[in-house]
Every structure is written in structure tokens, then in C-alpha cells.
Length: 336
Image (cartoon, rainbow, N blue to C red; front, top):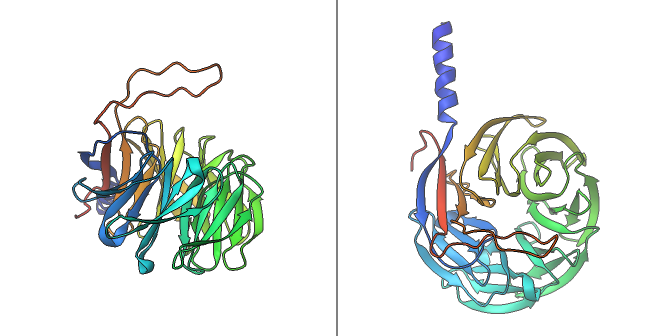
């Protein structure tokens, strides 16, 4: 009986191990930012500097591009309106496009450093998070118009909707999470993520009212968003910029620029443990999770020597032409 129990435990452990199953060379020039899956159509929207690339997650093929963007970051998908909304950070606007043809339908004014963007189904509104402007621009997706700007108490990064009338966003400069009432359009609560510093990436578990904030200080902070408090932190890689949570497995994820994907299992709503650190590729800081196939997607490229910068400036390595690639990560035993 003991032998059988140990064997069963070994099988369970093996089945929950994640691995890179496919790597596709997508190519294309420029850096990248958020990877936003469209689960019903199994495609990915990837911000690439002056455009959004739309990639088939099954084979890595380029399906099309949303052009006319100056500083591409995030994409929000509003399926029932047949529209997507992509932030154009350098000119502080949002590009509205057709989800079928990827044709640009209009440009909506936002604010300085329009970065992440999400759709809130409860209010049927789109929320941008404008970093330097410390605000969220609210958009009516059916009309394709700006509703108003909601001031925020700090610099926003990524956010999430609970589907019940609240949008949450990390405030990276003051290490807090803010809650926005998505119907009344006002910040209702905010709380510290300490000991996590510089929260950027975010994912949500709506069943247990938990938020996962990936922090540049090398931890993931788990919040109880009903109680407005941090319940625990767990170690992750350095340079995080992506997070996800899969309710079917109870696994949370954090992707980081140091080439790691940290897998964190939810033992209970307040108890978490790191169960795997998967080596991906240098620079693979962003991730997307398809909630229907349970596949995880990260991207990276090959880099040249670091370019010289001014004192105190950010060191950037040039991306080698044609090397931008998409990696597909699946659990062992997972069926396509």
C-alpha cells in the first residue's frame, strides 16, 4: 500500500511538470511587450513597438498585424463588439481595430504613457493604465469613445478585472494595489504590497478573491482583495513582467527577464509553494496563458552586444534580426 501511494505521488508530481514543447521563429523587427491570448480563437496579440502582431498559437504563424501604433504595449479584446483596443504609449492614445480583419477603426485619446489595457465585463468598459500620467482612461468599446480619466494615487502597471464591478491595478512606484469601481469610475480602496516592492505583473483568482502581483524585488505577492491585505509572498525570478493563474490546476506563474518561469501551486487560498522553476530564454519576461488549452506562451529573441548608454541609463542589447521566437509551455502529459 505504501509503495502504491508513493507511486501515485510520483505520477502526480510528474504530470504537473511544465516543459517547453514547441519553439516557433516568428521574426519581425523591434522589441516587445504584453502577450494577450484570445482563447476562443487560439491566437495571441503581441505588442511590437510600432504594431501588434497577431500569431496563431497552434503553429506560430503570423495571421496579421495591427499597424499605426507608436509604442505598442497592451491589447484588450472585446469579443461581443468585434473590436480590439491597443495602447499606443508614445502618443498617449488607443488604437481601436476590427478583431477579424485587424483593420484600424479609429484612435481614442488616452494619456501619457498609455501602457497596459484590460476589458471589464461587468461594466462593459475598457480601462487603460497610463504610467506617467498616473491615471486610467475609460473607454466605451461599443461607441469607441473615451468616457473619462480616473486619477490614480501612483504609477500603474498591469491590472485585472474581477468580473463583479472592480478593476485592480499595481501601482509600481508606491508598491500598492488600487481598486477601481468600474461602474462609478473612482478608486475605492488601495493597500500596500509590502514586503513586495515595485509590483508590475498581475493575475487573478476570482473564485478565492486572490490577486497575484509579480514584483521587481523578486517575489510574488498574493493579496486577499476582499480583506485588502497581503496573505503571503513567494520567491520568483528577476525582471518579472508577466503573470498568470490557471484555476483548473491551481498553478500561478511568473515570467521574468532572467529566463525563468516560476510555477507556484496554490495549496489553499492562503498557502502557496514554488513547485518548479523552468528555464526559458534570456529576456522572456512576458507571458500569456490560454485558459482553454492551459498552454503558456513566452517570447524572446537573440541579442547582440550591449549598446553603450549614458551614465545611469538603461543598458539595452540589440535584437538580432529575424530571431524573435514564441515558446509554447505545457504540462507533462497534457494533450493538444
